[in-house]
Image 1 (cartoon, rainbow, N blue to C red):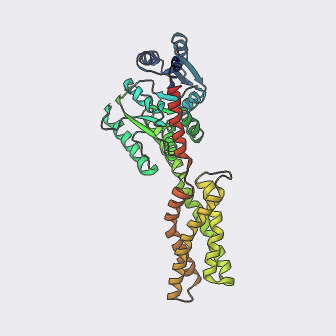
Image 2 (image 1 turned 90 degrees about the vertical axis):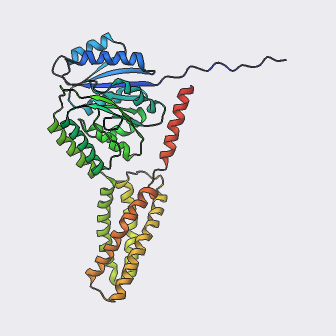
Image 3 (image 1 turned 120 degrees about the vertical axis):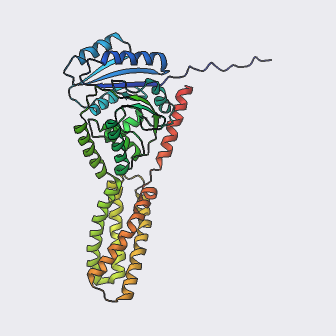
Length: 391
């Protein structure tokens, strides 16, 4: 009887690589103690391959020398020296040069309890989520800070919910992580180089449909914080206005205004030769092509020829809704007055078009220009995570 064939022993799992960035500016008094505490915690408690990057934001005190000494003394610690200030600039530079699966950052004061680090990283390592943030505003969080900072933080995040429809609870907590593939996708879309970097990153992630995991944290306010509240608040407000101007709804409205103007001019030009019914239909059909193409390019940011025919076919299906509403409005108006003033006629048609706008936007967003690849991309990430674990 032949001896059974034994399968070769499986290779040990490949451990995820994690890069933890600590941005600093003139932190000579606290840097050494914080980095050594972090290094000790990672050595004892983190089951991944990890590195620490001290990202110096053009410090003018002894911070660069202390950071260099720490990099020489401690294994898996490096110094990244920048010539310009800006937390966002530091994170962008560090994350862009890191060779890791997951990228994280935390404030140098270590206000957040380090025991939250593993719960922050685990969903990203497993492929469950794309970003993870610490939140001080969850019921399970334990936060020690003054009423002024508490009020400012809650007011800012409420403002994000109202203006940008943010679904994450705490944009400003200096305790975040992101998968490297998500960072590669998002970093080119983030313009801010300072404190608003976090908010813009999260808003863009939400707009792209990426999954954001939240971890309640224990957090103790640093009484020696160097953040200039007034200038930071003004920068945040400017950033909110900029992101608000970039929303799909506003871009859609701008395209809609131009399309409506073109429609009115075409209707008036065709009204005499072919009559109001045909003028309405032809003007809508012509502008529908331009409207769909403009929304494809500017509102939804889709380039190239992929799905071009499908998008325009879907746009024409949506066009029939507007055609039906405007035709009904024309018929009703001419039933009341067979020869209405031209201004009244155009006004009624514009009103009918506006009434169809909301349905048109929903249809374009959820059907015509829906990103069919998101589910497939998420599935690929999950398969890749399983493959790394089994490799």
